[in-house]
Length: 85
Image (cartoon, rainbow, N blue to C red; front, side, top):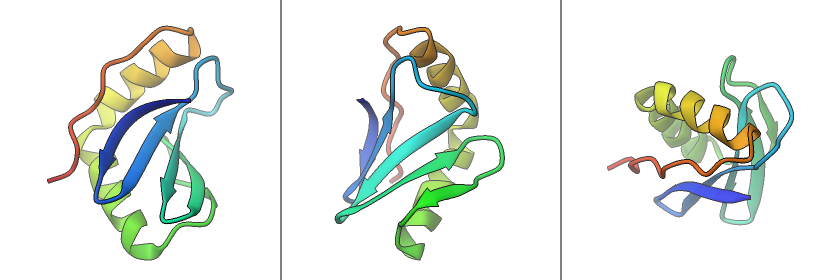
């Protein structure tokens, strides 16, 4: 797992050589979830406030996330993405 961003205690990861569909892994205050990049389906548990922030961040960085996903599934390193401010 490689961290792509961290803000407000939320840590967002991508896995190298991960499976489809494109998704991110998130951790916050002991909660863990994965979120599909295409349709926003959440698997796992995450407080609503944290999810709101994560979805806001995802919307701002949609193209960068897809680019990072494409690199990660090939086992290549990807740049970190700017946190939500």
